[in-house]
Amino acid sequence: MAKPHDIDLMEHADGERDHADRLRDPAAREKVEAIGELSELVRGHLELSADAVPPARFEQIWDAIDKSIASTPAKSAGVWSRIAGWFERHRGHVITGVVSAGAVAALALVLRGPSSETTTTSSGHGSPTVLPVAYRPTEIESLETPGADSTVFNLQDEDGPATVIWVTPEDTVEGI
Image (tube, rainbow, N blue to C red):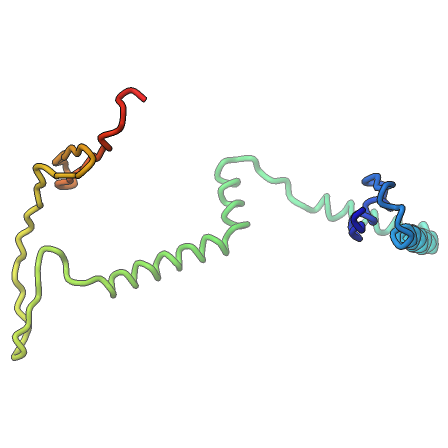
């Protein structure tokens, strides 16, 4: 039989689980008894401490709690107040997100190269020369794929041209 873990013994002592089969080990039984004794000592100390507080002091504590509840303004259930409350509770997260996004945008602007429409060349003497670059998409009309059938789609939309290549193995049975 496996030796029980301390967490299992504590759960047994608290009445959360029944590990009677694991209490055959004398060391485990001693630990459970020691946990029970310690629990009784702590519980007894807390009860004595509570009895030592005069009833008038308990009344003062409850009065202070009632005053703090009464002085808390009632929360409005409006949409704007809920949104404002959310921003108030999550202000740090929102500010961190905004600052991070700004830093990434600034880094992207600094690190990006020349735009795709122009190319800068330098001859070593004087200032660089900017030349326009013509963009011509590559069109694939067919593709040979050994052991498979391929279909090529050349697409054009508002984002520009795109080529899709669909490859199907020859041993594929249609309809499966």
